[in-house]
Length: 245
Image (cartoon, rainbow, N blue to C red; front, side, top):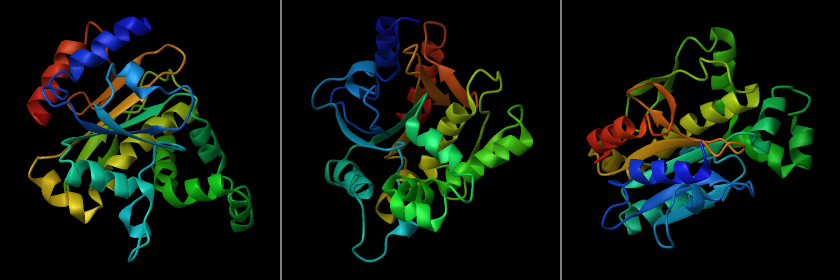
């Protein structure tokens, strides 16, 4: 599918999200090939964009007292101070951070000594280890069985089939797992819980194929990432309207 068509499809999908006052907090990777405003067809002022290595939102248990990071501060600024109602987490193919995370399965490579020498390894070991653990479940169970993820609502989980067609590399599968794992991290912040539980705040997951320009939306109805194209956009748009309006 051409990039132009991708833009049309993603704009139609989020037409009801980006309505009269289009606002969202968009978390994505710092990869230079990721240009969120382009593939979401949004304009200046439409979204708060937060970028880091691996589109990660650290879990709240890492922060005690006044110790914090940019990501939770951005969540509060966007969703509390500015009353933004939608959080979008977007991963992508050929993610260098996810490629490194996969290598961190090796205990020597991820040792404390090596983490002290590499801020990137330390960042991934501290804040993406749950994604790696979840991916290990996928390796044990296979892609034809669903993984269970914690949702943004307390005690509620959702099922996800990760690459049942076996079209992606192991690192790309890890990237998709990591993207979905961030939903639970969003829900870990007390200042968001009331809004999440009252359905005043909604969390979405996207995944972008760097090489084809195809964009995938995680459909809870279909329990998988579904490519946004002319055949799927109407049903995905209906799902967004039904569950997230």
